[in-house]
Image (cartoon, rainbow over all chains, first blue to last red; front, side, top):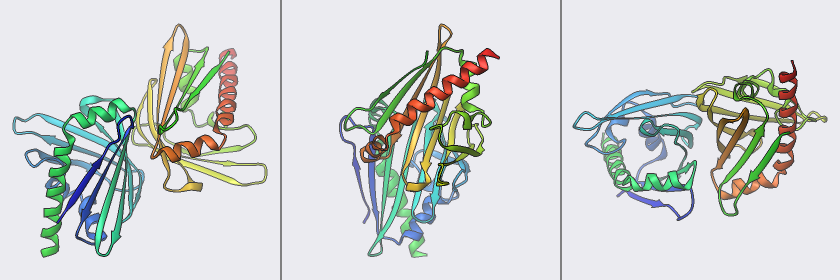
Length: 159
Length: 159
C-alpha cells in the first residue's frame, strides 16, 4: 500500500508532503529522476506530459509542459540547486502561468526496513503564495500523482 | 544617504531586508551583478572575497569563497532560477559549512524618483534555519555590506 499525507499549518509559507512506498530507495529514486518515466506519474492522468528538459544534477535545469484534453498548455520550469543520489534533491519550480511566483522544494529520500519515505518540503515566497497553491486543489493532484507513482513502482518491481 | 531595514517576524521562516540607494536602478543593478565588483562590497570588509563563478543569468550558477585574516575559508554557492535585468533575481544560496541547509532568495529592484529600493526576501527550509541565520550576527554583516555597496555606488557616480 501507498500512503501520502499533506501538512500545511495556517499562517506558514510551507507545505510538507510525506509519501511512503513499499520499495527500496534506489528504485524510488530511479523512477523519480528518470525523464522518460516522468510523463507516466507527474500530475493528473488526464494531462499529457512532455518533458522538454530534465537535467537532474546540481546546477541543471528542467522544463515540463502539460496539455489538457482541450489543448491548453501548462508549463513549469526550475533549476536544481543540489542533487545527491539517492538521498536529496533541492530545486525550484515556477508555473509559467504566474510568472515571478516561485517555490523552493527539498525532497528527502529515506529507507526504513525496505520501505522508502519521501519527504517533500515546498517553501513559498509568501504565505499568500502558499495559500494560493493550496486553493488550486493541489491535494487531488498530489493523491493522483502518488497513485500513479505507486502503480509504476509496482510494475517495475514485478518485472 | 543609504538606509537598510531588516524584518524577521517571530515564528516565520523568512527574512526581508530593504535597502534604499540614492542612485538609478541601472547602476545599482550593474554593481550588484558584476562579478568583478562583488569582492568590493559582498560581506564584511575584513574578509577577502574570491568570486570563483558568478554566471548571472537564468539557469546559471555561482560560487564565492571568503577568507578571514587567519586564512579560514567560507564558501557559498547557488543557482539562479531567474534573472530579469534590471528588475529581479531569484536564486539559491548554501553555506558549505552547513551542507544541506539552503536558502531561497528573491531580490527585487525598483526605482522611485531616481532612488532605488532593493528588497531581498530570503526564505529558509525551516523556522530553525531562519533563526540560526539571525543568530550568526548577520545584521552586522548586512549593515557593513550595505555601507560598502553605497560607497562603491558613490564612487561610480562621481566618475
